[in-house]
Image (cartoon, rainbow, N blue to C red):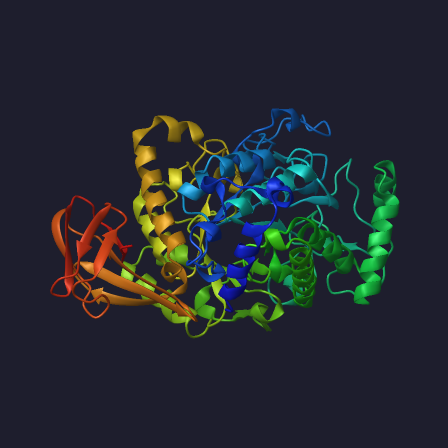
Length: 563
């Protein structure tokens, strides 16, 4: 990965010397300055990032005035209606330092485009589109989540804290058909058959579930914009603008006016206008893979265009990032996903990374088996690419530690495993995943347990552990993106190292350590006389005889070079 440090240094000096009138709007106090400004020696690597994933509606409600729209007032199943979380709520927690304290350097939130207006019962209880995956209009935000200005503020606030933004996008399907939400025209979507997942065709050329219209992502046939969408744009006073922008897009690209290209244009507008850093792409294996390469091409173009227009807001030289949800993909499979009759390399179709569905099972193994496995895979089969590891998620009914009985081990596994980590909201506070009366994945989607964080000492203890590991991971790209090596079997001690052009990062971690006095073997990695700092206990130690000695009641040590 190319790190243009001389360019960044010159950029910093240029900004520092600009007249006050030009920079006043972007003046940032030291405590809210971008991470790169505060610690420019530590570059950001998506391969080792610490991503926080949240349901927009379930995280924090900062604007109760937007809680009810489109008369969404019918009774629903348990946890299947809107609960008030919004974009302003995410921003409020960014400003409060919640994510920074947790060591988060990227936030992924569920889709916020306008959703179907009515409720529907798909067999798991009457449901509104609180989750964001039932799009009605990709060109507008849903007022339940917030406004375009609030999204812009969120992105700017995150960037000021050195936090990247991943927007969750859906290209595969629209929202379900309801009395208030008719199906898109028949040349845009298929309404049948329902997928059986027996081979490539019955996974891609079908509806994911019944009554979830499937976009013809494989088609190159030109289609007209739906009359209902044209009428909506006209009523909102933006018809001519939308049509002119579409004309410019198709003139520039030469793409046919097929369904997927309209949606690609609408999704990448958010990148072009706001500087969104990456996409998390939903239901990847259910669409024609060439659509993803096209999505990435246009998103990357939009990102570079935004950077050129906003040089003072650019965090670094990382390209646009795209991670995909290929359901049941496991890192052991390397670059290929096997449909049975066809294998697809999604990494060759625009994706830097795929969500890894294996770690939740691997988490029951010993630490060395887990860490050595992923270090080996990421530096062999997946070299140059990445995986996004998780232990709990919004639609995985078989997470690791569903009862939240092992929150400390969960943190150790997730935050110390090679690869990118995905903290699902409430992992760090043991938010319950077993809610009485829920059906299906609703049990995974309760509102964030802020009250428990504020009132329960045990919850605070868990959160502090996640914070210490998260900050260590964020400060040391070697943890996620570096190479792993075991230094000692008992007590268990390992190293991570990363060398990239002019940047080097080295750390040592000890796990399952005895309480009281203990020695950690670091010979061959840190030489005698080296001063180290244990960020977990806040203790400075010096290497002597190939080891360091600590005396505390902690079972973990996070060692870095002392300043």
